[in-house]
Image 1 (spheres, rainbow, N blue to C red):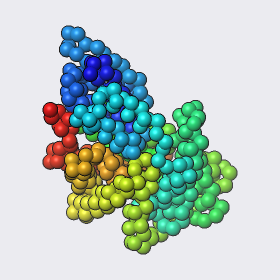
Image 2: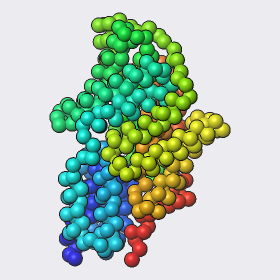
Image 3: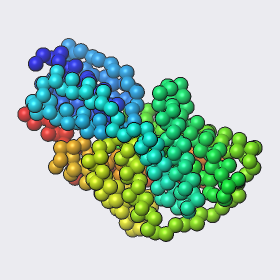
Image 4: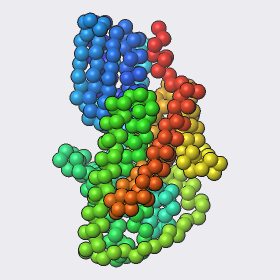
Length: 405
């Protein structure tokens, strides 16, 4: 087993893990443990757009730079890559065979087709509108806007120039359609419908990941990811502002409406539909659906109970802590990456809607309201980060197992 084969495998593993959703600090930790297991002296540095790897002693290093792009979380491929890394670490595959297995994972067909993915956009959006307190008109309209957002995603995925403006374009179209619906068809709370329709695109999870990296002292990646999340908030709000203005010029201003709440049992339905929608959007394996549903219920239930006792902001801490414990135990006992349970569950907790409302209020010159909402957003994100870090301290992840001889 030559050093070149081992290095080539580690570099390919680094690119795969980065592309399928590993955070920077976690990526460096796993790569360091993998290199150690393969008998390599190595150091790694990860950012959202680049990876540095140095092999050998300080006086005689071979350094590699990998130019990468922030990838969408792909739980199915992430699980497959994780399994390959364990096989190589345990000696069941050689590094060369591991590299071939990683190529096979990258070339595999997506588990869900475009039609089901678009439907999952609508499902997640309708459920999000229910969590935001929307009535039947808002839930139905949000589901329709989610379908439009999903169709737009499918259209732009093969056109890089359009993909760069996907989020603000989706925000523009969603606001235009929602406002037209509210004026011409049925009075509706446009903000709740638009928030629901765009919930999959709002970078609440990116914000939480950035703050986790900052809390883990990975300042370069955390700062870059935080800046990207804030910029995405701004560009989406710009799309909303333009869509609102165009819609008002074409159709007039919609009536101001109050939300007519739905029965409590509809929230239970949303708690089933939302994780299933996220399962498809995150490309998780169908076999993991039961675990993802349970994790989502635990996260939401713990957050609700914690919010009743400690307040809504600290409720997010309780939800993140509970699902962090479950996800880490799942990873240890079943030899699977904890992200399978963690990521879909956190999507029920992340404060993306607060960030959206904050930037929107500031652009409308409601500075005090915007600052207050922004503070709430960061407070909730901090609670989620604290919950995850505490859970990892109590039930450590299994990276240490890779260092065992």
